[in-house]
Length: 142
Length: 413
Image (cartoon, rainbow over all chains, first blue to last red; front, side):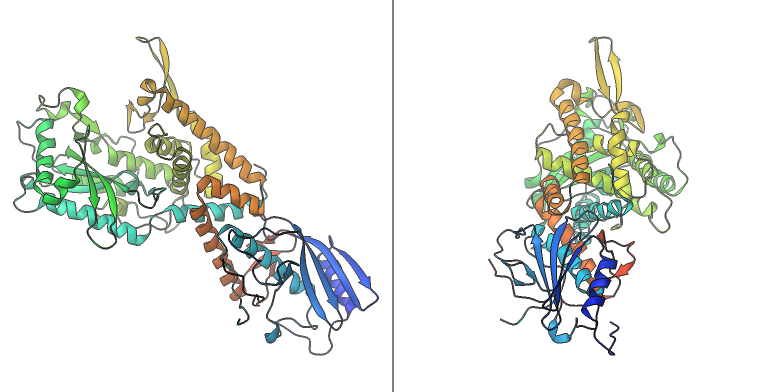
């Protein structure tokens, strides 16, 4: 990944980038130096359609929630979604923070959203194959 | 079916993977070959009553056509159709003599004798059990037949040269209890003809498409056919159709039979190179291969599915006596069309559920897992392409950047 070490990307630039790359989404700028992007994503041509909410805050960083379906189906026998920070809130976990896989030098539209698409892709497979995650990744040691 | 190019590509990938999952593995193929070779060696061993007739055991049926699929239940037998070819027919042998000579040799074997089922109309059937730890199980139909001396050469030639429509020279002579001449005729020319290798040659001719390095036709007919993991579109279509039939009829004895499905599919196939296009094309044209003939003695019309290498033979001859078989065939074909139409209109988890219902949960789960793992590898290699509006697709103009999913471990059940 190319990182622009010169300066981190301003909120407005991030917003512009999202508007241009994912024009069907809706952006709401907030006074607390954050914005919220809401939009639809499809993991593959024959895949389902999912609504997501992305919040970027100048200090707190980025968070991604699955907002529709409100209750994502679980694989039979599983009690929570795979690779999430919070299954009930459907707060997705898309990268490994310790390796700085995402930081404020990177455009959301080039990283977080594509990873969300990929998460949804493997999520659909996870539901049908009895809960085997095919997307790779790591778990925090329990 | 109104699908975009990308949707068809994905659907194609799914069907291809389902087909591959239905196929037997190389290990299973080797095990089947070892098993029938064991029987073959026994039949032709020194001291065998069959030795003077130079017995050769060859595979026919779905193994020869490359359309084998796993049985629905793991514990069911795999079907192996074998031909026991004999030469140097003694002048006074009748069909009964030939059949009994083979049967006698099988009965001499302590183990085989236990495994021998009741004598069939044309074959001896061996419910073969592999004695190793794996315990492979085969339902072996052994068809005794007479061929002339130069037969193996004829066979090799037919499979390596340009296709010729007249396959009659590949016909073999077999026994048939229903013929009424079982124990009287010593004239081979009067015996029933069958042409499994002519049929196979015709099938491969129908299936062939211009793609480099795809298929070694001759290898298919070697006494020990090699394992082909890469299948031609028509072979995949036949595998998928047979599985659909297996799931729908679950062993019902009046289910549509494989030879009819295979023949009509091969007749209807239009050289499409995508499995999805081939499947749609075949299903839309399969009915055209069924003829209607009039029986003046019974004042009735009846359906005729001609054997392409013996047009007088009707594969659907049992339909007249058992109308349920005919009804089941058309109900099945209707259901295939309905299901394909449904699939084309469904997306995501709903589509996956439908596919599971139709082809079986285990098979579909395995197929999707394989596809998913390939995508993971692509991301790792920096080659997982996607499009922002339609998602992961090989024609996409963007690439998923390398990363690792993180998050809580799922609660195990």
